[in-house]
Image (cartoon, rainbow, N blue to C red; front, side, top):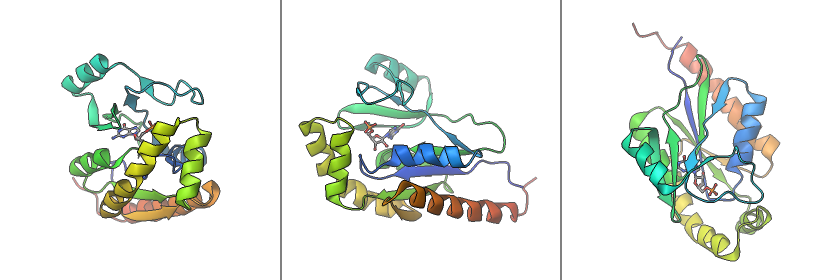
Length: 191
Ligand code: 5GP
C-alpha cells in the first residue's frame, strides 16, 4: 500500500460552501485530516476562532521566510497560507484554498486531487456571502472574482462538484475518494 497520503484540494469562489463541505467531509470520514490555514484577514463575527490561525502580516512574512508553508497566496488584500501538512499515518490531507494556492500544491504534489466546487447559481452565492456577514464591498469583490476563480478552477480541477446540497455533494466527493484509495491500494508498492 502507498504510504503517501492523498492530497485533496477544494477550490471554488468565496461563498460557495467549501468550508462547510470540508468540515462535513472530515466528520463523515475519519481518514481525512483538515489543514488549518493562516491568514492576515480579520476574524469575522460569524466565525469561530479556530477557523484559521489569525496573524498579522509581520508574523505571516516571518513564517514565509522560515518555509512554514506548502503554499501561500494573496487574495483580496489578505495573505492566506497552508502550513506544510503533518498528518498522522494513514490519513489523507484536505485543503480548502483559492486557485493560486491550488496551482502551487499541484506543483509539489502532481497527483493532488482537486475538486472545483460550483454554486447552484450566482444568486445563491451572493446570498451565502451576505449570510456569513461580508459587507457590501466584500460581497462585490468576491462576486467579481468568481468568474475568474471558476475559469481557472476548471483548468486545475480533476472533478467538478455542484454544491446544491452539502450531504449530496460530500457523498459524491467521498465516493470518488473511496475509488481513488481503492486504485492506490492496487498500485505496486515502491521500495
Ligand atoms: P475567506 O477570507 O473567505 O475565509 O477565504 C478567502 C479565500 O481564501 C477562499 O477561497 C479560501 O478557500 C481561500 N483560502 C483559505 N485558506 C487558504 C490557504 O491556506 N491558502 C490559499 N491559497 N487560500 C486559502
